Length: 218
Image (cartoon, rainbow, N blue to C red; front, side, top):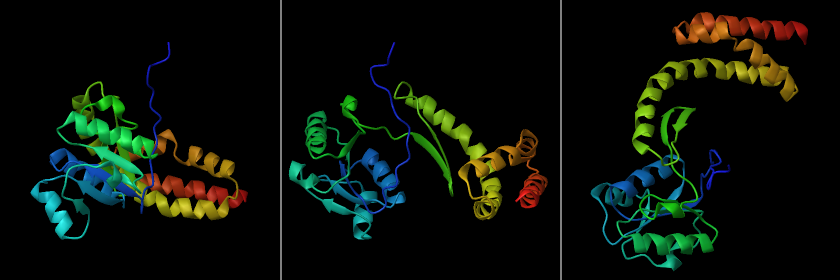
């Protein structure tokens, strides 16, 4: 039986796009910080805001409409975050945003109007882990996020070692299929077992051996 709502996992590159966050409390602040990390231009709509949001305004990192919500304030926004403590305001803002073609995230009720959720995440440089329970149990997402932090700390140095290899393989192997086959061989279970044991130098040596083999074959 098909679920009533099914999500499609995706990572969005939003640098330079505009987002509007409606609300000035701690939840709104959390969304603002995440959007800024993604290079988004942020506007906040709220009569009042927590000190951290005010500081971001003073620093010139975001803009602030210090007044109640009005639909005209959403023009130009690709994303709208509804995070006030007033469900009626959130509902009006969500429908106004949808009518303008913006994606809506409901950080506060009514949650069913969301077009997307913001999963719990762990980021270490270019390595990003996300986890979601589809809203069924947000606390479990937070617990799993803590578990993922140790994995991120383990695999981030490994990713940094692989990045130069990736560039070399891109130049050496012209087809995506050949590159895919290379990585399937190079990142064998033996190699990944060494990574899990923290033996990164030995693991890199085996990957480099695979690179040498690709040279001989090409």
